[in-house]
Length: 503
Image 1: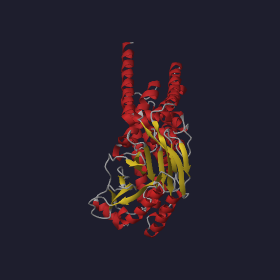
Image 2: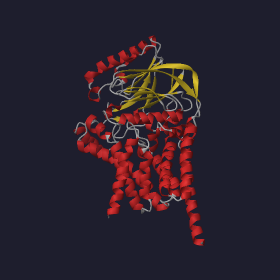
Image 3: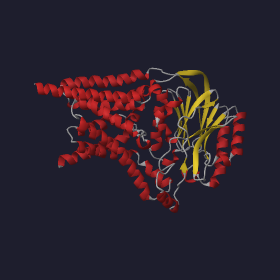
């Protein structure tokens, strides 16, 4: 009993430490150690125990790593404490279930001890679980293992296989450390070679250029209005916000492209058309084009409870992008009518955003083709590949004020950095309260505007052409590789069993 309890305590401790590997703490070395501890606890575990150990690991890591969902739902969303806790805990349990699934599969269908398990089987199963987590039940790829490595050599794998390739490198490293600690002399030598190859391979990949810069440089300006979430949706605050963004646009004079954040003007576009025309003329006189976040009524809307979250390019013929990947319980409520009625009675928001088409074309602005994402859409790298290689520049607008002064905005910036590296293009990130940033085509931070500061971040960027390997094949390269790894491990296990019988 004591030994079993200790295993669960160790699993919880390893999971609780994992968020320290992500932004804003950025202790990247914790990630392979944390996963190595989990793999060690899975050795010789029965399927149910392996699942349980993975589950408590996941509850600890996601519980501490995504606690900010409570802030969004309770503090800024105004939901009752019980409902906010239910949603936060429910999300944590679902995410932890994917790690439990990997542990169960490892114990039920494979061997979870030894060099082959630690270097091949468990990393492959873990990454497959991450892949499933990224799209099943609408998907939530936050805190994928690879995001811990945005400032290490492993970031070089982003243009090759995306976030899953970096995650695979992390957990193979974890398995290598475990083998170095507990393997035979021969296994240790093999593990050392694998770990060195993984890290040197990441460094080598990071020196390659898969995309090419265009000749023309662009001056850009990213507006950060710093509107507190508590007042952002108050009608009496709207005139002041409109005046503020007009002034920030004046401060951006000389920029080719000016980007305002998500829902910078928090009302329907139909209500402020004269204002937007004034901004268009103002920016045109400055030699600029403005992209801005706002809302609109969908075509054929039956009530004001239906809306669309959009970005508009104020060109001669306005161009519109409609957010296509919506946040459950944030932008739409997948609940029965009787619960929706209760929510109205409790004066809770019940409006449903209407998603846009999945294959919307890039904007054609200032001689570039610009792919747009809104807020947490940039978590879904594979969903953005339809715009590549046509798009030459990436823009993400967000309102991370929902998360207050928590770790979430920093994690979100880290995610955006991987999207830029996957595509091999600059990514311009304009946010309401921060962190607004210019991100380079290797995922490097070119410049940032600190949180909770009103201002304009100016920079010079270039459009990029060409396609990275990830842009061409998406996640299928890594998914196929993990399946081959599992097939190889299974074949090796069967061959070993036959040799044992023959002996």
